[in-house]
Amino acid sequence: MALIDFIRRFSKKEEASGVILLIATCIALISANSPFAAMYTSLWNTPLILGNPQTTPLTLHFIVSEGLMTLFFLRVGLEIRGELKKGKLASWKNLALPTLSAIGGMLVPCFIYCYFNTDPYARRGWGIPTATDIAFAVGVLQALGRRIPSSLRIFLLTFAVLDDIGAIVTIALFYSSHLSSLGLVWFLPGLCAIWLLVTCKIHQMVAYLFPAVLIWIGVWQLGIHPTLAGLILGLLLPIQVRSVSFAKKMQQTIDPWVLFGVMPLFALANAGIHLGGLAVQHADSWNICIGITIALLVGKPLGIIAAGILAIHCYQRKGGTSSKQYRELIVGGSLGGIGFTMSLLITTLAFPASSEFIQMAKCGVLLGSSLSASAGILLGRLLLPIPRSESSSLSPHS
Image 1 (cartoon, rainbow, N blue to C red):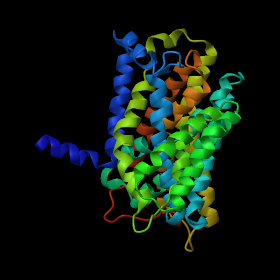
Image 2 (image 1 turned 120 degrees about the vertical axis):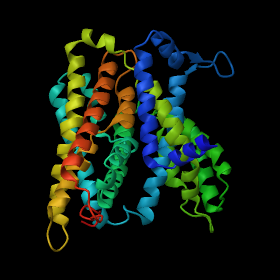
Image 3 (image 1 turned 60 degrees about the vertical axis):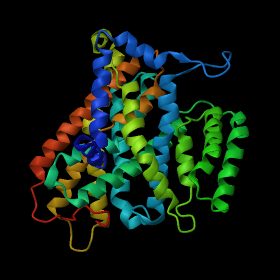
Image 4 (image 1 turned 180 degrees about the vertical axis):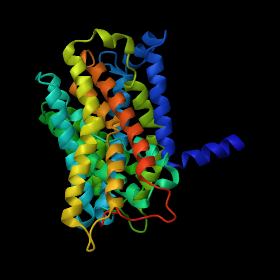
């Protein structure tokens, strides 16, 4: 009973998902470099015949990365919709600092990556270092303990939501295949069914399941990455139905599955890098690894901090700025370099599984994210004193 109580208390902590994600990453790395490496690869890439043997086989990797990850994007969509309606994203005054920081945190890493990679094919990975993993970032932030001011946590969460929006737009515009009108046969009926359910104020979540499947198939057939169906669904679902807080209820329902199921499975499926083969890679492959690592470790914080300073000076409160704002911005910018989940997803979209570039890209993501996490903890301990009372220097109103 004591063990069960511990697990329940642990699972309620936000940083717990980051710990589980880290464990899953370590298991994937160990498996890919152990005597069981062939079994590990076969597990994720063996075709699974569903129904008629003549149908196109699906792999376990596809089911996790393009099926279950839809729940992750549904969670992001619900969060964005809630914040746009009556949260941190409801007014420009609240949005100025995290929005400009998110834009700067995407542009600078992109330029740094392209500087190191002049080959046109290698440049397909420009979007890899532009993302931030909110679960890992929050988990690392918690390692600073009482040093964490509430304003820094709010800034990091708000920035991460906006960063997710940027990553989703990047995937939709640049990492989706050629569009096909065939998908509209599935997509439009699903969309109409969702609209009808929302109009009729249906609050039973199971009623939305079949239309959601239609939308997923439609998005897949359209040539857009199918996980974006989750985002579309999250933005369409109602905030409140009659007296029921529908969006909040759904988010609470899927949160444990996403944080402790989908994301660790995604890490297990995508973080397995065979380190023994890295030394024989082509020079362009090493440029990809170096470009991603430096873009996450240096470019991401540089873009966030520079744009954040601009926002503070343009939209500062009456009374001026303080050194606390800059210290918190530096720590938040360093943690923004933890790309991991979204960066690995974009990696699988940028390069095919058979490409020699994909292993080096994953290596760059893991190395850059690990170094960024270490830098964030170190800077946090150096720049953030243990306060007697929480400050509010980097709140969205700054």
